[in-house]
Length: 594
Image 1 (cartoon, one colour):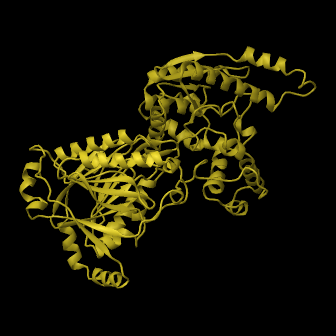
Image 2 (tube, rainbow, N blue to C red):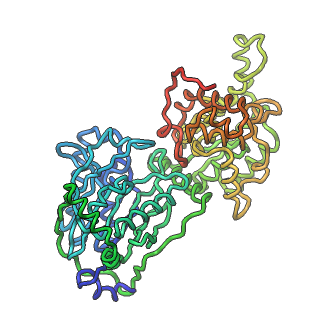
Image 3 (cartoon, one colour):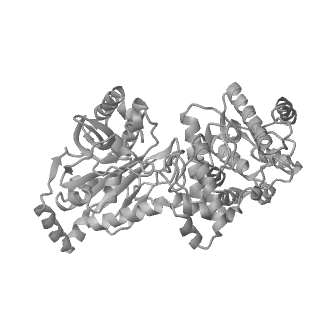
């Protein structure tokens, strides 16, 4: 159906159809004026497309999460001014639902319903997440009351992120007592692997339970360790996904939604009558806020707003795009123009380099290889080859003479002791120094290349390969590194196959292999999954069939390396439990399982 055809069959002319726009945007935390301007740009585009309602992500004004900026009075005042600027500048008649910080007798994570130059109503988030990466009870008060908004006979409710995860949350009251046909959900839902599918299943279930159309808009982009995947969608009252936006891209998703099916389903569901009576008897109250009439449809004739359903990305493509998005936005939002990556010829640096090139463009990536006394001809060749494949600038800086000078300087304190770990780490620290010198001189951000398996076990050098500004693979286990490298090569060999197939080695001593210090990665990563991400005990892991001594050894390495991880740069979160914001253990503690 075209926009011209819908003009005579819209909500305002007696039908149950409403045009909803989901503004899947990438805000910058703290950029209050910039975010407000972006919101208004999307609002105008939505109005030009004939949208009746435009929905923006959670805390779109401030960006999410604003963290301790919320403790600054000046920030709160300017945030309020920004939402008022949006209200004053919004297209006439069009309804905007905007995430912001509401301040009065307390501070609330809130959504403003804006129309005709004013904030017509506010929803305060009821359910404040305080687990994993979330810390909302540190900053916000919980909301209590709830409202529905009525426009020309159609009612809609508003929820914010965690609100919709609870079956007895605000949506239940809005749709039962308030008789809302639409529920608009504002979200800043951080990505982890597989979360999009889980999210859709839950919201579709909630739409069915409420017999309502649920419009779910999510933020997109990177914010420090977090990545927001977008993937906004609309779920119908029969639990079908009616529309879905693209993943990891800004998008204005405009859809015509027919609320007529809601009334039809509700008339046949006698259970709702009983539930509504029970809720009313329990004293649940929902206020009804009237809104002004909608503007005439201004969409260009011939425009088609049948709901698009973008495909769900496959698992590896989803993870890869998350890493690209997190890297791109960390570099961009922090004002860096270029990055530098130490290319060892190994798989971790190769994948980091590929992600950087895809995130920023090859012209903004500098590859530096730093061969030492134990670097093989094969890894040196592969380092140069990957830079050539991507067409980037490439430098070779040998560390041989610098390493010798360090050894000479330390000859007296090291006298009589055989070479060992100290000498190995010296090489890594020399490389770290060279990369940081390039960063200081040229202004490039250093991307570190260590993976989650290494970080878990402390198989990394402080102030060496851990030195840098952003750790792209910090939450990517080694076994997944190999999978992602092969995935990146699906359209051609950009990462040399020799790099992927070679036995991993730090090349810090003669004939060194990672398996000299660690269990095989296919075993190690399974143990780390159970211990780090699932919090299983040593006994539970052993009961899964793993060798007891291997498990104790791995757990010991994880526990004693917390001090290293605390000094590592931030990196992209892709798992349900990443090091840093997710997993918080004391460095100094006496509990032992090993």
